[in-house]
Length: 308
Picture 1 (cartoon, rainbow, N blue to C red):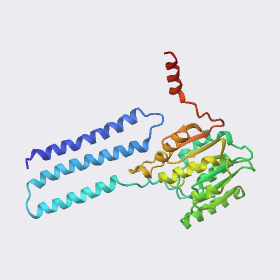
Picture 2: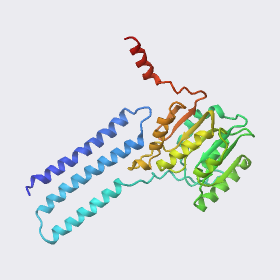
Picture 3: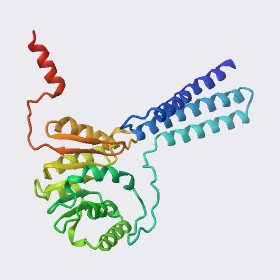
């Protein structure tokens, strides 16, 4: 085998690394208003992994060419281990670990998934703030942190309430949820439903909720079912917020975004997009629906055709 091949592999490995570096600096220097940082990070990690694999393979090949017998077998084993390690890294579907939150005043939270969403929630949910009779629905409650934020900042009227659906398949976080709701001192405004959302949602009153927060199963099929069933429970001009819209594991059927995009295609005449961020997306349920509305481009096309 010509020695120049090893050098070519090293050079080829440097190319995706250069692309990763370029993407990183371009998006930092010119960030779009709604840049999907999760997707960008995934692309950079993939390119970086490919680059490392190429460079390491080329360098090991250079060493390997000058070896025989046992040494060659050792290098081959090292290559296999390296390949398995890179595959494991690229195929990881784990959510990034959030900052750990210690005891927060009278509450006991171990994770903080919500603080960075609060400015957006304040703006999106402003129409419901302190209004009487507002009803909220939350799918996926974990330790109750988001539900308590809604109670303390939006559902502040004595007649407002929230229904929380969660499978609570871990007794530790269910216990913490119960403890935190009791500590909120407004437990009478909270209805807890321990069940699968796909079961519980089918048993609820249609058109009953003013806003719905969906943060349940992130499998695309499950998220789509939650979206469709929840939509029918929403009042006209009600709002639904999807969490982890930007979370992007390598397999598309594990992405909430896959479900949300399918939902957007089917419900476009019924839903008004009011917010799209790096991690969450929100829609308002239209009060009136025109199924014959072709959209802006359709109207422009019709006008142009009318000229001929």
